[in-house]
Length: 443
Image 1: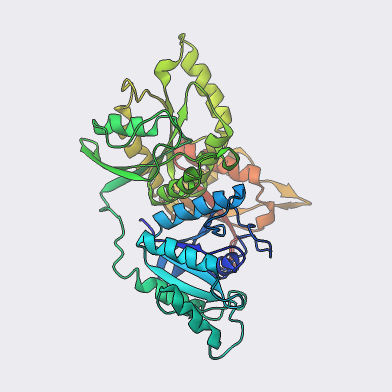
Image 2 (image 1 turned 180 degrees about the vertical axis):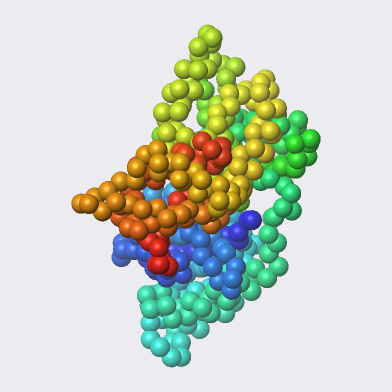
């Protein structure tokens, strides 16, 4: 499900990051009394009125600065503005309306986006200070007094934001559609793959990294079922990003993973596995998504009869943290093996949603513990009373034991492998929760 995006913008040092942290409830953004500390947009999910949203923090806007860092921050903020559904414009009651505030307000008005004017640092409880009326001169409607340090007024601020989201439509699909995020670093052929699947030029394809600047949905129906392919701008390592447009695309890519049921992690056969591939795959793994590794540009590799086996062996080492993911060697350019994707997508989707009865799980547990005895420490041996499945997408299993600290990671991995050998669970991560019997909390 798509989530509305709310961008927090304003000139430097008005308290944007403090407000961001107050809304999301954790110290995620760096807070320091130095202009320009938040040099990159930071985003997080939060909930208000039972609706989930993405909040984006931005660097301070200096509209006419020639400073390299400040001008980059301005471009980043502009990208956040362009993609936001609602903008929170943060100003400072202590400094009043500055010339920069007026310039930023004009910039925001040109965007045509809904704007909520926040007057920060109104730290005293009670009626707002008389100075707040000056902010009406910005032409952005009623200013909302807020103390981001103490939290006063943040509820009123979010209520005003959500007034603009009343008619927001979730870009969602019926349950019979399998949502597939095609992710990977730039220029590995994600858009070419979707064009090949769709049979038409649905997204811009170029050799310039970062051509695809937003998520694009392609709906496909065939004999395997109904699919929604979500193309994304590639996730690039932050230090290598030169065009700030790509920094915002990282947010879009992560949100595409959040929406997806299955992730196709596209890597470039001519480059092999990279650190950026690990980052992309790691996010999909952490979110519990079914995943497939598609090795693209396979047509560009000089091959012998051993090439694919050797390449796959190396990839298994590289992707050891997600050893469950199947590999498919493809060419989006020639169409080689692309037709096999649909069957594999459907299979890993079903595995991600698989339910296993408690009886069958405990048969595997009995066999596994008889084969390899549970660990012991100082005369105390781990006893696993029983195991049951508590959820799907990804499959989550709860083990009830006598002492949680004896259930070492290596033995958990052994049990996971036994469950996979018996039931498959191809292409999906699984989660193991350990509980001491009689206690309600996970240990």
